[in-house]
Image (cartoon, rainbow, N blue to C red; front, side, top):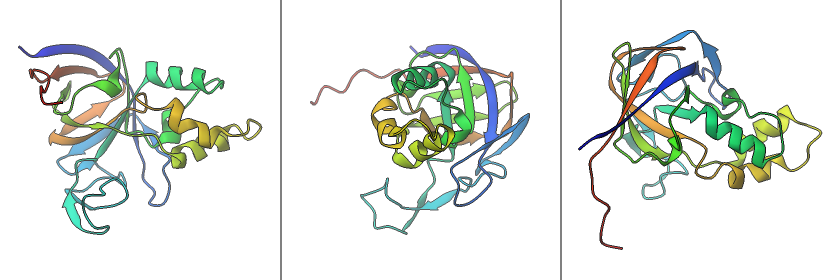
Length: 190
């Protein structure tokens, strides 16, 4: 039996600039099978990097990290853990900010997100927090020392998820999202 949740898109964003993690708000984004149109992570393939240690750097692989998705609720928890007022999704290079989905980061791989305007995303897994994103938080709070190095711990299991596009469409702020988790028993082998 598939487990279903519902939530809402509070922000749609793209990160248009190579070399910068920051994303920018859009009223709506065009979603293609390659990702979010205009986003630096879009593409059917990508080159293996530091997060794909099982391949040599630079090898072409399927892009399963086309979209970065964060949670309103989890970002509030991260900000509280870091003793700062807010962590904005733009600072972390998010493509979507969702609300109403408990423990978004812990949704299992192969969970599908169905959006009102036909787009469907499939979760690859957790987007582990890094100091690159922490650097952007530090820029926002220059008078609070040590934020960049504190973010990886504060953001662990709360940094959101990455996904790939299974069906093209449009995603806009205010759209609803239906979350369908795969029906799978826990793996018994340790």
